[in-house]
Length: 66
Image 1: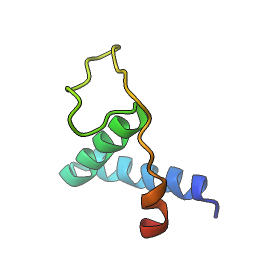
Image 2: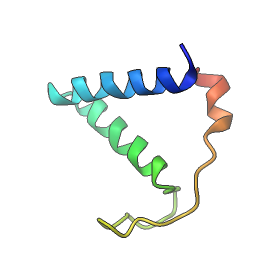
Image 3: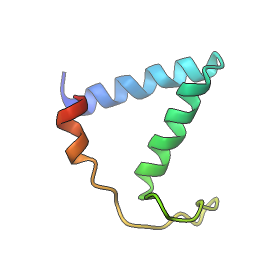
Image 4: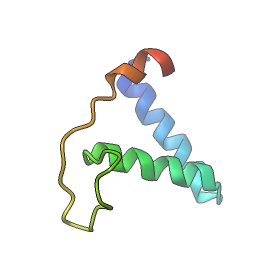
């Protein structure tokens, strides 16, 4: 399984768990969404339709968590 496939699979599992009311899964999906939009610690909360920022480099975490 490629890393991209593993990512999609993990997100799908989180979505299923969130639909069943798992709060940690809901928060994890929110964190993933923030990272995908380039949010980084210290940035203000993003507004709907107005998300801006630099892309977060998550590559250092790939080796630790893959």
